[in-house]
Image (cartoon, rainbow, N blue to C red; front, side, top):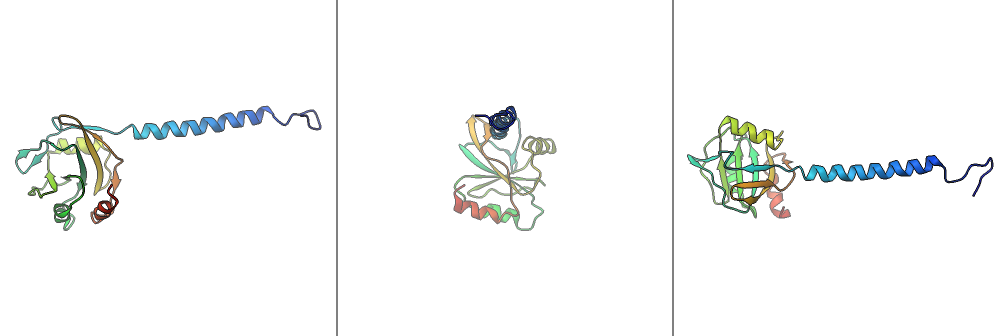
Length: 163
């Protein structure tokens, strides 16, 4: 079909615009998939964590990891009293010793291990939460995005959502 002046309705610019639009959508989809496949691994043989004075050896299929600061008032007590559908690994930024509760294992480590952990999982806020699941033996893979919590009271809402 031709218009006045001899130009067609289907021009080269329309074709290029469609091509670039499709390329942008494909690029966004590929980036989205890449970001979610970027989850990290943690091998508890390489990351030495302690429960009181014993070395922590994971034995569950899945855990909720909570990175928190014991300097915030009542934090350790809130974590000790939580009863979510998965066991909790509570990692304290200040490495204070705390007795484990029924559903929460309190972990501490040396400075090097803490720094490696923070760097590996790109933790920028406290408290933060994410899930890990067992791959084999002591090797676990991150199973969710890292979520920043405004405070630990937000964990009670996670219990209702069944994560």
